[in-house]
Length: 125
Image 1 (tube, one colour):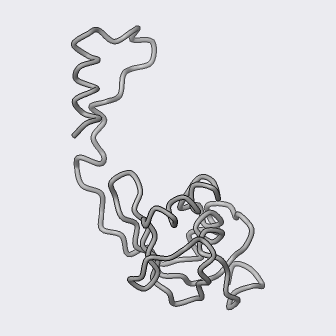
Image 2 (image 1 turned 90 degrees about the vertical axis):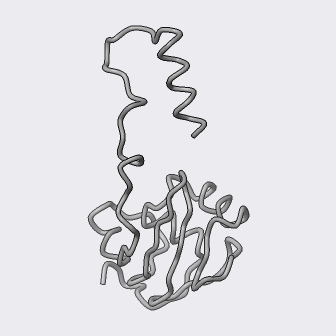
Image 3 (image 1 turned 60 degrees about the vertical axis):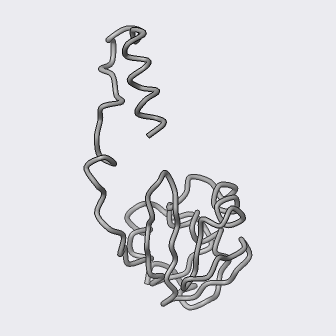
């Protein structure tokens, strides 16, 4: 177990933030309110309690993270501890998710009009 808390029920928005699935707690709460978070298949509100064994699905950036809660934590923990708090059952990222076509080399200067159009096309796909 990563902490002493272990089997306590905690708020889903707090847990998602604590184990670093979202950058801020406000983003975690907003994802819950928008219906992007499901616990055991049910859409949940930010205050929904979760316990070890629950399956949490978080949809963000066009990708779904599927994790099973192993440990409940209330405070944000470091990345090595965070990965011990859940089992990641997410599908592997697709080649489109890992593509770096929208990236420019540092120091390459301003993008040309053609480059900007290409970037816009990638963002709207």
